Image (cartoon, rainbow, N blue to C red; front, side, top):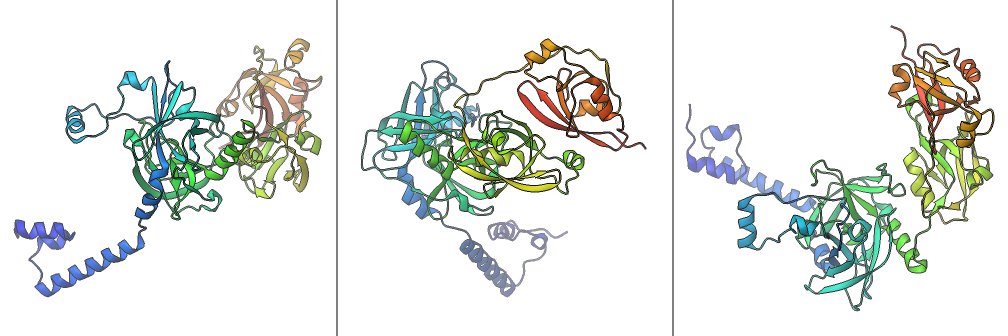
Amino acid sequence: MNRIPLRTLACCVLMGLVTAGCAQAEPPASQASAQATTAAAAATTASASLPDFTRIVQKNAAAVVHVEAKYNGQRREPRMQAGMPDDPQLELFRRFFGMPMMPSPEEQAHTSLGSGFILSRDGYILTNNHVVDGADAVTVRLQDRRTLKAKVIGTDPNYDIALLKVDQSGLPAVSIGDSRTLRPGQWVLAIGSPFGLDYTVTQGIVSAVGRNLGSGDQPYTSFIQTDVPINRGNSGGPLFNLQGQVVGINSQIYSNTGGYLGVSFSIPIDVAMNAVQQIKDHGYVTRGQLGVQVRGVDSDIAKALKLDNAEGAIVADVSDGSGAAKAGIQAGDVILGYNGQPVHDAGDLPPLVGMTKPGTKVPVEILRNGKKQTLQVTIGEAPHGKNAAGGTDQPSAQSGSAALGLSVRDIDADTRQQLDLPAGEGVVIGDITGPVAARQGLQPGDVILRVNQQKVGSAAAFRAATKGVKPGDTVLLLVRRGDQTNFVALTVPSEK
């Protein structure tokens, strides 16, 4: 067995040439020289293909600010949350090498740290709403270490943005880009204050665009997904393209630890700037409203409707008096396009509608009974708050379909009035009797309004509509629970 001289191994390591060949005798000098030349050429080529971010940082760092919000009471939990390890050696490192200290647990309960960026030279600053939400005092720290008091001009929780203003002029400002031109694979750069480490620069690529997270408090945002490392303190900071323009606001991460795990999300700057202008103009943000409840078309629904592809947003309910109702949109219609934009899934629709100015008439492409048609819909204005309403019923099994795994009963007059249902519409699920309905999450008390697009208003009508169901069939139900109405597709397992 050949021994490898320590000096030779060290050279291999330094040259990046540790391979199986390093365990062999040293190559001739000419061969070693050729290998070194090849490695150097490869390194030069790789270096030339990577972007240099230094000019972007030099140009824009001064327009990025550190945001600190103070609370008299306990603050709300931020979206991006992570802590420093409880390690005595790390504590020693902090003390002797000047690493910024994170607030103590007591201070964290009354402090929110984030980032932001200066929009204009007269002191307007943009950050996330969740950084300053409910704060009693907000300050920003500039790159030259000046600390300025900031006033919250306005916020919008649905877009998660907050517009701040400092009493200062002549400030450096960022350039605003167009987030609609972003494509997966493009380089992007973040500047912010993760863990209080001011002006930290991280880079990565756009992983996806138009990402809908299914977040209940941000249904109107299609996020930019990146692999740029961002953590607590990056919230509200800018995301730059290679032209040095802001294309997004760093907002969220997916994490089971509180720290970055490889996926981060930014609010598109065109969405944010639309909201900023509205806040400046009249103090709040208006959004368009179509007046429908929708859900995605999965494979079972596509099978039940005999669709070629599981695409679009199927209308589960239409609000009375809404633009959708007046234009003739009906429950069961599949929305395929909105104002010239394709709708691939239910999550695609709210951001498109939300960005539409109320009162605008837009074309909505639908599929009804296998035929495409386009309806002109006048978009309404979404309310600033939501009123919750709902109702449940006690289970009382009387009749049903064993194949679908549920039983139903008629709705009595008092319950019908409580649920605001017209006569002859709907039956109540009395019991879940099998795995088919259970797998789809149906519950006793849910109201079934339709079976395969047919209205059912009695247990007898439900029996008639489902009597022909056999193994392998898919039945489409329109189900109401509380104030939410959705289509649910039940597929009866095939016999083996």
